[in-house]
Length: 368
Ligand SMILES: *Cc1c(COP(=O)(O)O)cnc(C)c1O
Image (spheres, rainbow, N blue to C red):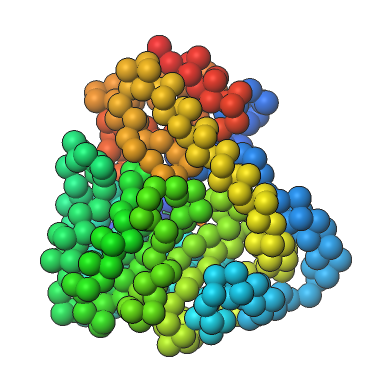
């Protein structure tokens, strides 16, 4: 028998599978060169604030030192910007790390975690990694008028049990692009006991312009069990640096601090994020462009007969019926990379991130 560590993996890890990146992007970049249109990862193609780039350059000579383990300067900047107390902020190596850490610290084999069908892919993984019982709640119907495939908040609240430590919601959600209002969230929180932490993943919050969907932060005072995660990966266009943050009651942050890696956020990311946060003009430019390009691309696709689902994000989910895999292959052969959704159980859809106008036009030109 040859050695295989798979048999040695612990009970929690044994049934899991590794992250599927969808495509081998380094190989595709070699194959297609500059005509490759990478529309699969919800990045912001306008790029980060020039002030963030300058901050990285200034921080470079000190890269031999460990970063500030508290991220004090960035927390101070976030506290001032968002009107929250510093002790209620945790920083993560991407918000992905914080979503995992929440389950690691608050869920276990004696507890359950609730999330929606078609919710963000990290939620079931975080649940499994903690050995907790996953309660996956059926999504809204495909023909729901405002949120097809979206979170059914009533059903999610009803699914919460006495042993439920966490509920994960994404608003807006990836991959569906759907969202719910602040009033709907307030009603949901009113239906969930304080012994259940409600995590609202707001990775795309900056892009939202729908009425009554200003984000969960305003509800923090009324619901100490509310946890909000955000990221510098999307609207701030710093995905490669890996930095996100979480806003919660200081007692939640204090628990997370027990397991957080001391130097989880690197020094270049800390410097860049603080600078990016200060450049509100750049953020506004990115958000305005995203909303306009989203509306333009959605209209172009709809004009060609595609069913584009409503989105408040920087991507569109397109419902294609039977043809999704064939269309994905066709686009792929033409160097247009979109995200197949079979892994989410949405095999009849494709997720398309906004590219530059030239890339979006290449996408349209590659359609049959
Ligand atoms: C992209 C994304 C994140 C952000 O992940 P990072 O680890 O911060 O890059 C979190 N949640 C959702 C729903 C996302 O789509």
